[in-house]
Amino acid sequence: MLSWLLLHPLASAGALLVLDLLVWQLLPPSRHAWKVLARVSFFLLYSMLLFNSGLSPLQAAPWAEQLPEHLTATVLLIAWWLFCARTLTILIGAVLIQRSGGHTGRLLQDVLGAIIFLVAIVAAAAYVMQLPVKGLLATSGALAIIVGLALQSTLGDVFSGIVLNTTKPYQLDDLIAIDGTEGRVVEIDWRATHLLTSQGTLAVIPNSVAAKAKVLNFSRPSELHGVAISLEFPAQVRPKLITDALERALQGCRELLAQPKPGVSIKKTVNGTLEYEASGYVAVMAHKGAVRNQLYDLAYRHLSASGVLLSGEPGSSPARGLLDSVSLFASLSADEKQAISEHMTRLEVAAGDAILSRDELAQHLLIISAGVVAANVHGDAGRIEAGRMGPGEVFGLAGMLGSATEFSALTPCVLYRVEREYLEPCLEARREIADAMARLSSYRQQRSESLLAEPPTVVAKPGLFGWLRRHAPGRRVS
Image (cartoon, rainbow, N blue to C red; front, side, top):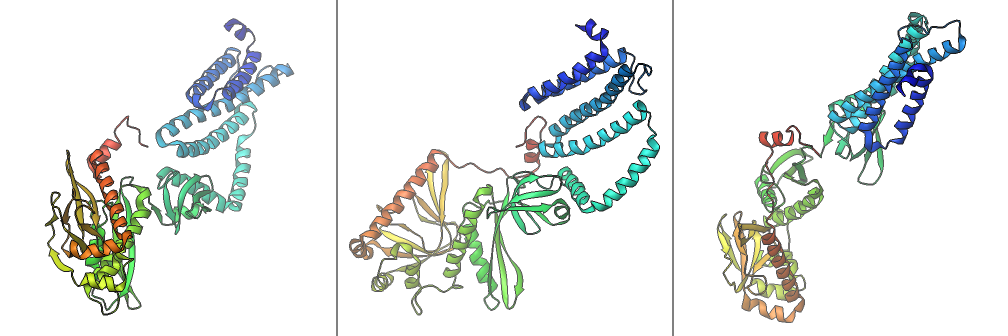
């Protein structure tokens, strides 16, 4: 076989070109390494055949007096330059894709490939076809200037795309905001970045705009995702009342990470109002929407409990106004609520104090008026926090709202206590209240059992060692 190839080098070289194209098309994309190896092998064999037949890519084709052989040799030498450019481009692309990621590698491969092919064409024209390259380069340079001026905006997008894909401020599937447009990155091409917005529309942002604009990447770092809510209140309201209430709202949200610590700040004043921002971090990007909604609800309840927002009927007592905020008693009439409020006892609990032990059979109902209460269950792994409660939520009353849970104050709390004997007439008259209590007790029991069966995982704090573990050699970062 090898002897036949050496005896017929020109025909064999042409056959190798056809065979290379067939192998490249027939091998599946999953066999990319084999495709690259086959391409390199065919190129080396092709070069060997040309050199053994007396042809050189740095010289014009011989046999000028034999026109068919001369034209065939010229075509094969030009094909050698193009074959070399293609092989080199594929090798560079394989290295770039492996090191820098799929999309970035492909874009740089295209840019380098265009440059390599341009060099190969000029080299083939100079060495094989013996054309005056200096005049060609001068003409092409002038033409390039004219085309560059005409396509200035498009070229700006192209080079901005190269910069963006090299520096990688965002990647595919990242949730980002560019110049106020928020969405998920679905494509980054030569000209623009494509974002899928929350409304289901596709926003196409030119790369030159993205390179100059302020870019917010909500997907990085992967273990921290900020959540913030903003509220405005009249400047006449004492800021400490609002900041304290919002801090209790942050403490009442169990999904927020303890570190970095959540906080409240006054952002700005506009037209006699102060804008307050309560912010924290969650570990999972998909939880941001639910946590933000929960923070607004907690802020409303704690602001109402602090007196910043008025709730209840005008002129009613604090106990009576508290009953209006408890959804459990929504079906009671005004007279029934008034009767219960007359037997409610106000309690103040310091932060860290126990309110109900897990073995205590409470014969009273406790309603949270202000502060944050933690509900804890005990298992083999020790004490596990099952949830946090805020103003308007109830617990206690053994046999109806569970007795295997321990309740303690996370912050200074104000509670109202109602003895069982004052609630029983309402429970007997309003069966829906007893049913609601039973459902609440069942939910808390199921929640406790699930936590005991599978204790919650602790999110690792970001730091030097975490970064080293994620970027260790041989470790694949998803």
